[in-house]
Length: 182
Figure (cartoon, rainbow, N blue to C red):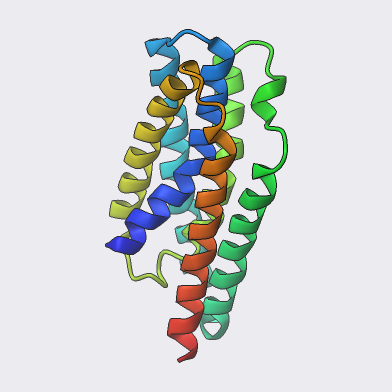
């Protein structure tokens, strides 16, 4: 269970960082924006791991002998990407107006990593539906809170959240690799 909590936390950090940026952009706390951002991000962060999980089942025995290496590489790549992006300017800086279309684009963009992480759910021996629900709930909460923090001058949190999420994903990947090698 600790793995799914860590995974949920780590995967929600991209959405949290973007939500903080949305809050900074809007300057005054807007409950409707916070709820919509949380709903978009939570839904897609919940859906994408399930897609990844179902795809990994389809590959099943074909990748069984190297699945731990695949999980390690995927999670390390996602974590590394998050670390790299934490040092870059975010896409939310370039957004002129926060519309549903923009939120949809941001939700899909931040959840692609979650789809790749979904490939690892069967290696962690987690119920994919419980995992999916928890990832969605945690992302919803962090996204709502992120918009709030952004309006309170929390822009310094954006890069730190992605750094922490990246390190956690790399750690989970290492854990999977070590458990399967030894």
